[in-house]
Length: 120
Figure: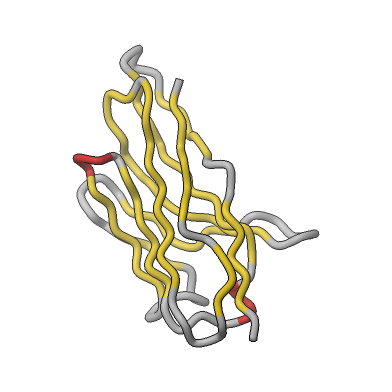
């Protein structure tokens, strides 16, 4: 079993910053990609950013230049630094990880989600 635990969400004013963290634990042999999606009520979950095990990154156009994804492979943790937040960034943010377990099975695992609300 693999668990992903997120932290760092909350209420913030427009223009301010938040940092999300997501730590993976359990039967992990290796982790390939890690990343963040977000979802608002009534809409599909959409990719915000992801990062490979060697550090290649990919961002949604809506967050380029404002958000930065990073990871600490030794800690199996991915981070999302969110700057210059806008009300339209309000959503539930979910982290994911593509994990190879000790049984050599590869699957995507998801965190439970953390609410980010940007409002004055």
